[in-house]
Image (cartoon, rainbow over all chains, first blue to last red; front, side, top):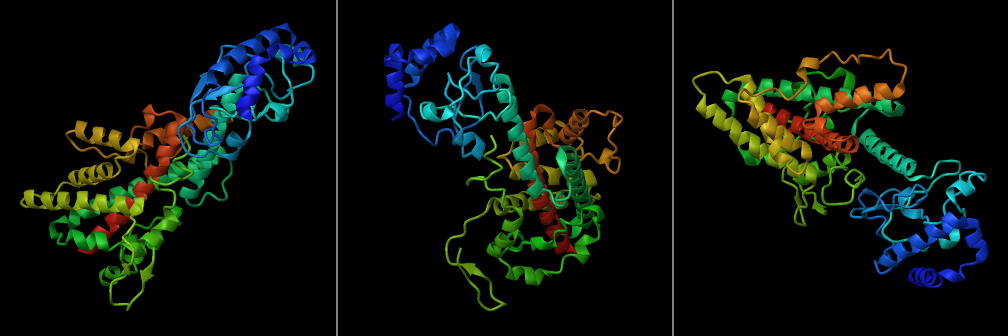
Length: 271
Length: 160
């Protein structure tokens, strides 16, 4: 249906309703022609409903035309958020910003009817009512959405930021957390350097024995006790032997469910 | 994964071949890098006391080697190899002093920018990334740090 629609449009340009052309205006007509010639080149690209979902975000202006509505984006990756997959825009039609600006922008509202035409390899970003729809602001908005998505992911990773709202507070929390983690590592390695001469263990034991990750005081952000090694480690070495990697896996999953390099994760798909 | 939970004293075995989660993979890699390195340090320098910084160096190196799928690990490795005296990768110079300067700016964006740049300093290679990239990298950097901490704790505990 999509292909046929495009073909139709291409071949029957002169049969586009005169009203439509009139509304477009002379500039719009020219644009329509340009658009259709462009569309003609793409008409045989695979229309894949999933393409827009499997996309990495790559901005390339189709034309150097400020009235251009569609942002062409390269598609490579995994599903992005709803907003970007569902919405479509036809090139010559776009949502109305204001009624008065129709002439300047040669906009048409009415995304529904022709929205199927452009399912091709574009990521479509819906412009909300009253928002600017020119290329730059769309790009800007898409970028901002990506960033906020990532911030949300970070919320899951960094503990204790449920009460924090807003970017600045969130960033604060992240900074604090990273610094505290780094300090912990430093402290532990210092301790290790003292203990090192007495190291006697086998690698196998270590890998099969995994610390119960619940003992990791993730939620004691403000009160990282450096004697945590003795106090929080409730499992002794023998008990740890009982827990195998699979058990640890269960515990760690709840903490690290984002860190999956091979599967779809919101974190790694944010590209 | 199915498990047969046997007697408490016996090991738990999963019936299916183990699917290693990335966190597990990381931890194993990490310990397999760090432990031999520590042993080697131990053996090589048994007469003289082991330098703290050297241990830290090894620790960081193990971290970087175990997480090579991430961008920051490359930067970390670079930093480690370029410095003869192993430098601390942590911003230990700024520990405790998390005062954000210029907060007299009313502009919210300015504040955010400052915080972002501070975050960049924390992440190895953060200076060269753009914001979106950096945010993702920070996420997995945090995870790896957490895992590293756990591993280090278990190593230390093992020997005490």
